[in-house]
Length: 337
Image (cartoon, rainbow, N blue to C red; front, side, top):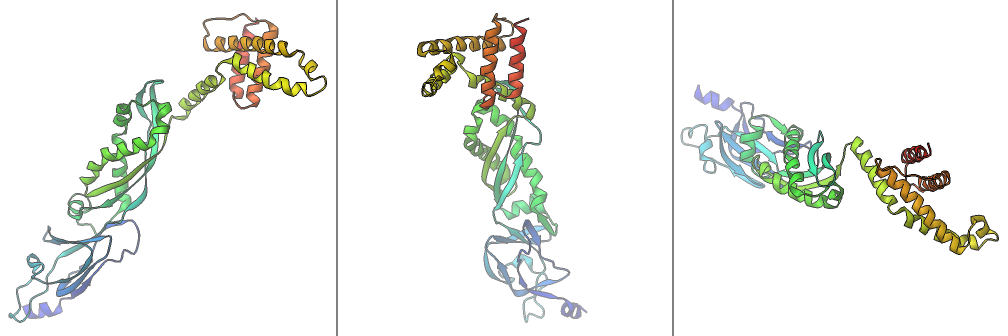
């Protein structure tokens, strides 16, 4: 009876994995009550590792290459004793293949803004996202902690865990850096290297190596970004007097080339500089009034009109937005009431 059972068994003489689809990290060879023929061939391709498991215990690991499997090579996997001492028996084992290819272009990002303390803006909330890559280095550890005895384990099943691992330390990293938000765009490479160093040991705990990590963007939520844009717009205006004098100085030579051009300006060369000073003072006073609501300024109707004309010119040049112009216009008109 034992001999008939032995004869009926199906034996495997070639073990290999062709990786028909992308994204599979671990794959179990389908044994289906079959046994591995003594002297069978095991082919492990580049970017693969094979793991033999006997009765739940990892027996051996094979890197890329072609192997002839015998009970001398894997003595712990012997399923039957030598039959009638004429030949060595086949053996039964679970065989797992693992892909060690680099998994490229994996996305990470903050699902919710991270709250940090910024040197310039105080408490702010930041968003960040980027890409990373990794590959499997320790199949035994990956089998024991992640994939287990499943028929296959896909890359997408691990994605959430790895992404959350990267984002978990991001808040501390931003806080420890001490870099103001306004300067973070110029330090994204440094942030990427710091994140990689912080997360690499966590990946190693899963039997993985974190190969690269890139921070592609650091930004504020939309409502905070609007406030920052307004602040940048005000800073771009800067010294209104010098800005006005610069515009007048550029306009005078062009006007002098045309007959009646200077008369059109209504000023001579010396008066043009004086005009720039007056306008600059008026606009600087208006800007100061907008930045310091508690310090009211008294201006004439002519000064207000002249200031509004200059501000409207800034809108046309794209320096001020229409909303900013309307706000400043309302502030100036209040000074006339």
